[in-house]
Image 1 (cartoon, rainbow, N blue to C red):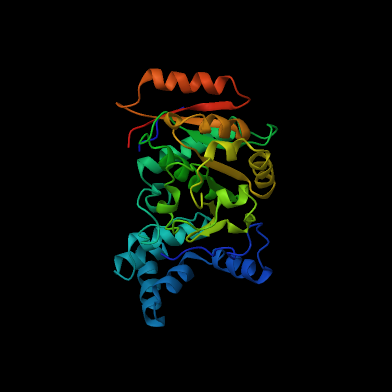
Image 2 (image 1 turned 120 degrees about the horizontal axis):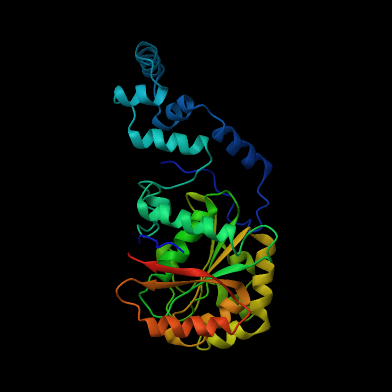
Length: 310
């Protein structure tokens, strides 16, 4: 597998609707916004006056330009404004310039960067491989030999990339030893999450939608339990993954580093597929080989190995 070189938002589904049954009215409004011509989108986003719109139209006719190009030439819009408007027309949600999302979420905040392109390449390979039509339904566990390899970075951005296809995507934090997803998505520590579900103290309604990325949802760890490996080995975890695969088009699971124990291998076995991450210039071949050997003894299907450069 190749190495990963590591405005206004589209409408979100209601937070109380993890199963995706959004109200018809909200869907209709979203459809109207997405079907607007670029000129109307820019006018709406930039709050252009009628006089300014006439100036743009006149300049457009005189110089035979597109509306967006004319608006930029007259300094009534920026290149970023035009890119945002095009993203709305082509149903491509991203959050360029957003202060709401962590800068590590490059697939959302820097969607036209080399790093984001790397995640799109990874997404394509997964969709043509372990997630191809006709394959058994699987979640993707992201595993790595050690802490600091970039496992959470890869899991989060891969989930963002899947969500940009329009399919409902869940990012599940199963790293109950050193969780980081709650930091990336601004979720307060200690809230109900995976650990609460596995001990029967919460339902799947603790799944959270992500602002600016309307097809992406996050299930945080919640409280860090004293027995993480035992929790993921119980039948409840396998039943949860099975249920989530019926509710979401794609499920990406972050796991603890293999240096913490067998948690990652257990989780990957339940998920059915895994991507292994190593850090270029840091990960040791014996550690990666040991993790590969452990995965080969499980029902998990290895989708590939990614060397993280960021």
